[in-house]
Image 1 (cartoon, rainbow, N blue to C red):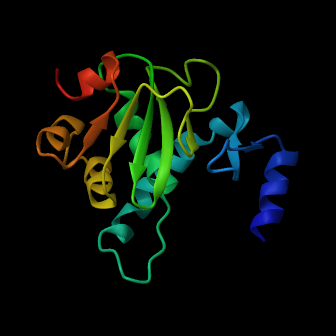
Image 2: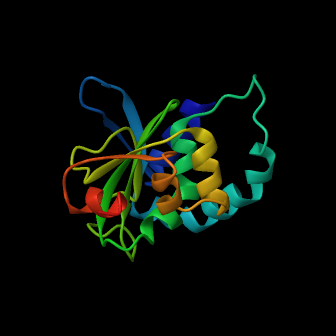
Image 3: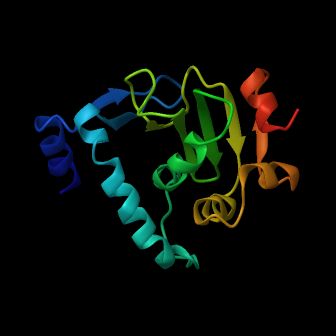
Length: 163
């Protein structure tokens, strides 16, 4: 059923398929410009479903990129300007393009897997991601408390570390 839905989304030009470079070498799907117009709807659905994720059961399956949509508004408002952030959790990795408007380069707002041009990498766990998305923790507090590790050498990584 999923393969059929993805083909439908490709046919309707809502998503496009691409291969990740090694070592991942997996096929991923990304929203097209038209598909990105659905982000406000997806964000509202994520907020609606968030209370059901409050307590994780041992049988729950979790994928890292599921956290991208709730985190996009938060990460895109950080005060260092347009950037690309990799976000790594135990469950996997995704990336977010930050800035003020829609994707600043006309590309994807977020995607599965690491970005080749990331300005910084945030390493955190799912509980910290959930706290960020719920607004009970800021990125600055998470970094200061050691719940979020920031990797990278450039000005964006330094700003995230508070340097």
